Length: 322
Image 1 (tube, rainbow, N blue to C red):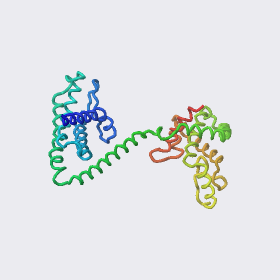
Image 2 (cartoon, rainbow, N blue to C red; image 1 turned 60 degrees about the vertical axis):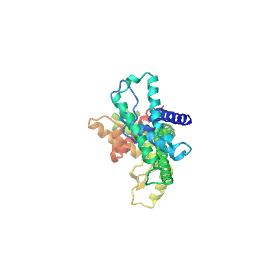
Image 3 (cartoon, rainbow, N blue to C red; image 1 turned 135 degrees about the vertical axis):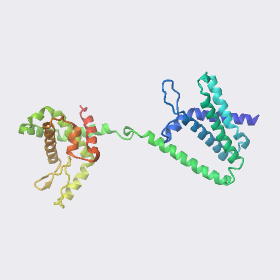
Image 4 (cartoon, rainbow, N blue to C red; image 1 turned 135 degrees about the horizontal axis):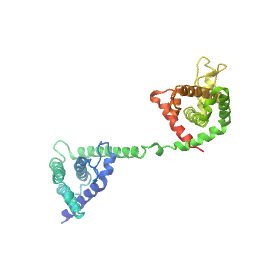
C-alpha cells in the first residue's frame, strides 16, 4: 500500500510539473518552437515539442529522484511515468475533453514517454546507472549537468527579463532632463543664431524653425552623451599640444576650427548649425522633404546609419517635449 501511495504521489507531482511548467520551461529554452498551447482558431501548432518535453522532463524527473532521493524504493521509480499518464487522461476525462484527443497523437506521446521511462529503468536503474559508470561518478556528472541546466535557466530568465531597454534604462527621462538643461544654457544662443541665418538669405527655412530647433537639440543631446563635458575638456586641453591634429570638438563635435583653434561649445553650435542648414538647403533644392534621419546621416555618416538612427530616436522624444 505504501508503495502505491508513493508511486501515485510522485506521478501526481510529475503531472503537476507537466501541466504548470511546460510553457515556462519552454519559454526559457532556446528552441525555435515553443510548447504548444491548445487553440481553436489557430491552425498552426507545435505539438511535437510537447512530446519532446514529455520525454525529457519525465526522464530528468526519474533520474533526479534516483540520484538525490535514495530513500525512494528503486522498484517504484519505473511506475511513476505510467501513473503520470493515468493522471493525465483522468484529468482530460474529468474536464470533458476526451473527444478532443487525436488517438494517433496521444498514442505516440504515451508510447514514447513510457519507452523513455523503460529505457532509464532498464539501462540505468537496474544496472546501477549502467555498466560503464559507477553510481558516484554518474551522480557527480548529473550534478554538473543539473548545475548547467540551472545556470541556463537562470541566464535565459535574466536575459528574458531584461530584453527591453526600457527595463534597463530610463531613456526618455534622460533625454527630457538633458533637453531642459541644454535649453536653459543654449536656447537663446541657438534661436538668435538661427534668426540671423534666416535674415542672411535662408528665409525659406524659417517656416521649419521648430523642426530645425528640434534637430539641433537632438544632435546636441546625442553628441553630449557620447562626449560628456569632462571628456571634451580633456580633449580640448590635449588639442593645444597637438596643433597639427584636428579634433572633433565642442558639444556638437564639429571638426572645424576658429583661428586655428579647436572649437569651444558655443562655437561648435554655430558651426553645427551652419552645416545643418547647408545640408537642409541641399535636400530641399533637390526636391526632397526634410527628414531628421537624412539630415543626421549627412551631418555624421556612419556604418549602417547607426548615428542617424540614434539621433532620430532622440528627435522623436524632443519634439514631444513641452
